[in-house]
Image (cartoon, rainbow, N blue to C red; front, side, top):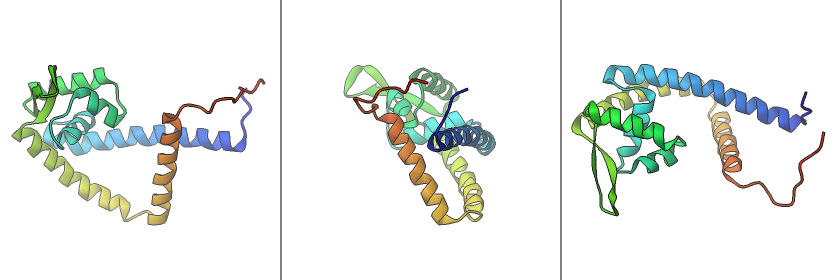
Length: 157
């Protein structure tokens, strides 16, 4: 069995809670998005594309997802009329995704349901604690995105 420091156990607790929270957020997102014919994944892609035509790779980087899964979602959204593929002016071989009127309408409807839902949750939490949690999650994200420091040796157990 691995031996962890108190900090290591706490970081593991954070990871497990984030996994649980992610599952619950995806379920809630699916419930919020379903009346508009969307899923959490589709909602995420439309949300990124709402800021202007964007490549599938850019959506994947923004959301921390795999490009292949975003491509599959974008293809499905295009088949269902929520987005279109447009030429990329920076790369003749590439395409970008852009919302259709139906996609924008669906996204706005989900955003309205989300606002009601999230305000209800926000009213039940301490704002300072929430901000501290967001800061801690950003720190963890930054750690995971950064290369490990050089010169540190792995501990032999």
